Length: 238
Image (tube, rainbow, N blue to C red; front, top):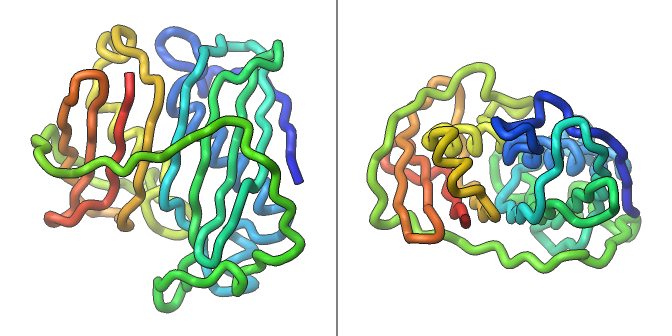
């Protein structure tokens, strides 16, 4: 099954250059993942009600291939590309008005039991022969960045607006924390071409997170820690 959504770049999805922003891409991806799971009645709300479980993003690899300007048309194609005993992989292809690939994401999800917080087998949360997988349109190898050798940039407190329906920090909010460590001038000077994300642990309202960073020339690694434990880490490629 593939869902194709037609839209235009909204003001809330635009960056300081009036193009679809990195955050805008992550928001589109999140909404698309929710919608494709909803078609199988295994979205976050349904999963909690039917199976007492909830989805978490474990990885997300995003490639930013070409800009789409504010108010320009785009399509977002979303489909499940694969699944295993413990993981589901959802791909999102964002294409411009001419049908050319502008951004691509591959999200890896797992289901956690709401009572024990242990990983559930996908077969126990509605992943079965109903699921129709589609072939990936773009190759993504999600790198797992090392959190070693990072320097503290700032400390932030998770606020109520960062929290989602599972009462933990929403996956997009982590990217907002990361991008806020860069100035507009820095982002314009070195546009982000790719992001490899690992969601390692959960954080909650009121948690204080340490944002740490390391520059490796044509890439940066950013990690968020809570009490010395890594919560989130990502590699930004330029």
